[in-house]
Structure formats: structure tokens, C-alpha cells
Image (tube, rainbow, N blue to C red; front, side, top):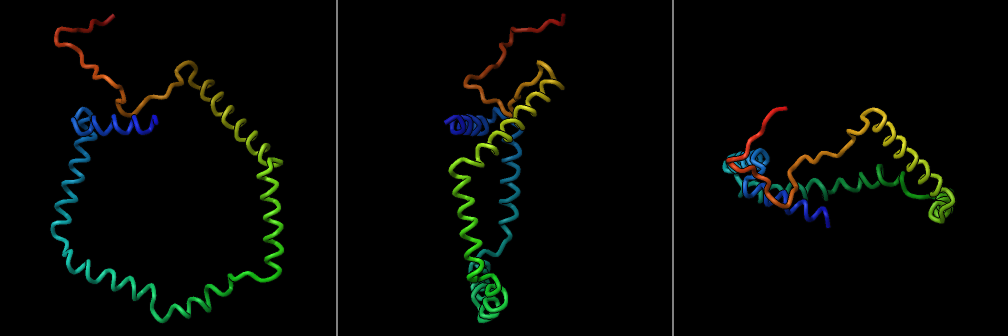
Length: 149
């Protein structure tokens, strides 16, 4: 829900040009794509690209691909036994015997990273948003002023 909210806010700010840098680059990119696509022969591409894709992807040489590339990867009887062992290991992981250990390691890594950030940056560890995601515009009044200390 937060992702949808932030996406809608950023979209509204880009459309209304409150995020002027992002709006400019999106407009510039779309304008350049328009100019580039103006000179592409679309009729020829729509006709010949599917033809070429079908001929290359489904031509008579696919029997050679099947014999020499796909056939070595087909499963044999001894491979099926190994596959059963792998399935059993996966069942154990799903049951939680090995999963809890991996979760514990992951959690410890997160705690270590957070502690190292606090060690290096102290009270200044914060997440700074890249875009203005505020709900209300915060525009200073013309009669407001700032005074240095």
C-alpha cells in the first residue's frame, strides 16, 4: 500500500512539474524517442521481423539442435535417484531443520551491518528519501526569511 501511495505521489509531482529535474528528463527522453521512431520504416519491420523470427526459431535445422544439444541433458535412471535425494533434502529445508539456521545467519548479518553503520555514523544514520514524497506542498511564503546564527 505504501508503494502504491508513493508511486501515485511521485507521478503527480512529475506531471505537475514539482519534481522539475525528473520531469525534464522524462520529457526529453520521450521527445528523443519520438524523433528517433519517426524515421523507422514500421511497415517493413512489422512484415519481416515475424517472418525472420519464425524461420530462425522453427526451421528444419531444429532437429539437429534436438539431437546434439537437448539429448545429452535428458534424465537417465541414475539421475532419477539423485533427484529423489535432492527432493528429500528440500523437504527437510521446508520442514525447518536447516531453514532456521539460514534465517539466523541472515538475521545476524543484518544486525552486524546495522551496528557497523551506527559505529561509523553514530546518530546520523537515517534514510534520506531521493524524491519529495510529502503529502502537502511546503512552499515558503514570500515574506518569510532566514537569519544566520
